[in-house]
Image (cartoon, rainbow, N blue to C red; front, side, top):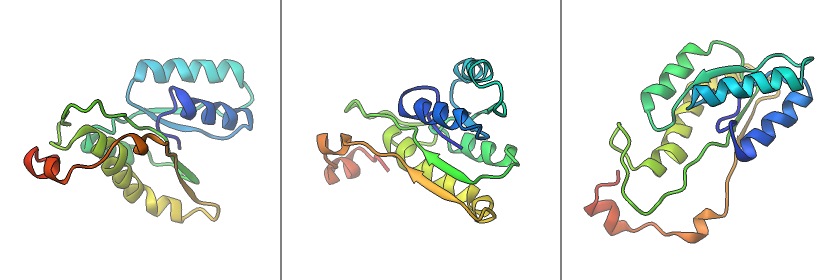
Length: 151
């Protein structure tokens, strides 16, 4: 299961695993991109199992819960790849959290928590968190956390 698989590093990860005939579970925010990815993988990797494309938006905790409830299959590897890079503007999700905090941390933690029982059923279970060096560009302002009510 790979989040953020419609572009960038997540797409590369999905392509490599598809070439190894892995079963891919790809929760996507944009179903149009997801269906295009599904068609591409079916064409380029005809011997591989078709990827399972399901909607999930990490900017919505309910969407994460819905995905975890609707996907009933096994999970051997959970790759947290999806992320957003902040613009410096305070953008809130429908849940009221700052967008970067929710997408990059809160929803990732929620998804892991909801899928953990299935991961624990696999003898080869792995959880992979993809990171970047973007943390070097910014800082966390305790004052902003208080005055702008980021949390």
